[in-house]
Image (cartoon, rainbow, N blue to C red):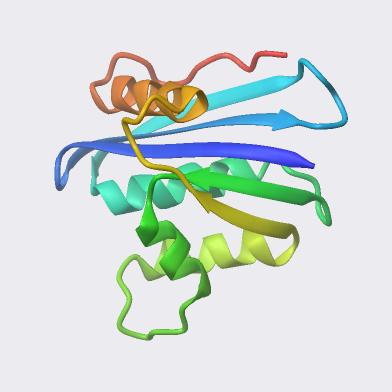
Length: 139
């Protein structure tokens, strides 16, 4: 089982955005991987979506993954068929990534001291501020 922690950030909304993910695997104790990135002009919701999408790309097809996010928006759009939803390009990409996995979402309260959520929040914020374009993959 994979555990994926994600967050997005935007300095101004819209404005410069950052995303980050951190992932662990149950079958490899001590294994972790993180990555972050940024866009010059985006919104907070787009960055939240992109964080999950980028993290899911590192999970092999058919695997089980629990996605931890502080974004109710991401959880909601992952299961809606509402044609009026915004960010249709990223929502479609998210749904494609989810369709190849056995997934579940866990909502975590942001800025509440949750260790992994605080880590991805910090990375996404740094990326949005232009202080980091990516972070090295750690194992």
